[in-house]
Length: 166
Image (cartoon, rainbow, N blue to C red; front, side):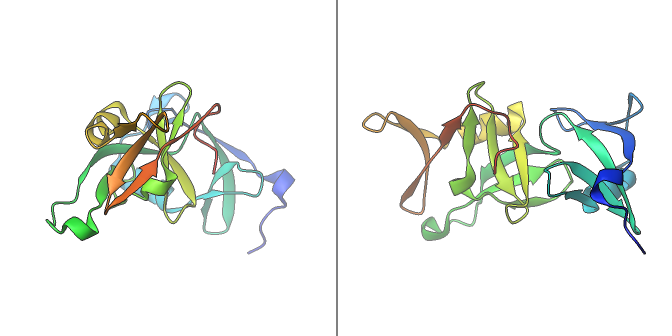
């Protein structure tokens, strides 16, 4: 199937708000099967726009901040101190190990990380943030926050813009 040129990608009346809720023409979408299908076919184009690509069709969607949200986070309970990890549950109903080197904090105190092999950004929900906050430490010498894992400190970068930075 031929795909339309970049400048001819139509838009769908779908919006993802900053809390990760999906809306179609202003009505909240809640069917898990449909949301999973959309998440599985979510892409980013060369311009950084979000689109759904399905069966040869591509349609742009509006994303207020990030399409993915970290719903919960917690230390992996494997008990192996040399292989500590933080597991995150995402708004697409999947979970993965957090890459702590990708943690970033906006000037508005919103925590973000990279997910899906660094293909997407995720915004921490309030509960996900509070759960990971118990692992965050402060380094007075560096005047910076970090997450200690496996004998290494992963410093959290602070930046001015929203969660779309890679």
